[in-house]
Image (tube, rainbow, N blue to C red; front, side):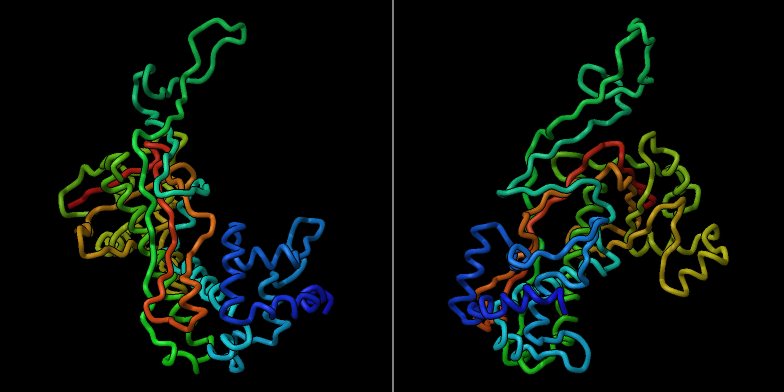
Length: 370
């Protein structure tokens, strides 16, 4: 196959790294260049792009290299962990990383759809930009919402001001991760198809942690921004359709409620509202588990944690186009490469450095119906 030609030519060159010390040298070199192994392989064997700017090959450079090595990762003939470690030990840390990322993306807690902007950051803190609340009236210090027009002659009042500022404080970068506790002797004979399920689960757990932090950002703030406004005006302890409507209409242009983050109790309360029991939404939910979309908003179930967890009667809503910024390390998920290459899977740590912040104060609201 033509698309494997370059990978075949590079096979022996890359296989030279298939030893403990050489594999560590390879990853040290990638770290110095701020590259992942996948990016390094792409630099040697770029994936072809067609005239439309789309990938003209079904596999990326990493996958093409696996193919020329004859390593299968799916089906009944999937390679065992031991075979992967002996044939291409330098590939295993990246394989682990990819499966964790796949678990994050496949998770119902995947927060990607809530992020309006993303940037790389180095260091332990992040100093975000934001737009102060458009509803505050002081022209001197905050934004105004008056009509942005005046006579073409130049006569008339000043244009309304849209201020872009730095938050007063830096935000500490968070380290989301898990520690793998399994002896290599336990998994070495298992096929990759078995081991990857546990890696997917780790990714799903990390995604749930991130979704919870976005929820908390709207619920209580992060030290640089306070809790988002509460629109609840109903009967305490009772969640009704009118409470969602009130929250929806409380957003001022250009903002619009596009996502609802709810702990289990509130999530169940929304799903069981009579207004969402029409045949179409009920059929979709029973057929494939797709929840209702109140007023077009995507509904997320937040997995709460014991320490300081909400009571379940706090709902955060936001506009995914304007609410949340993500700052992250450009290396993505970090793997303790040396432990993996040394077959010391027990207590190997996988982590991801990133932090979420609020872009526009008016783009988040909440419903405290307790």
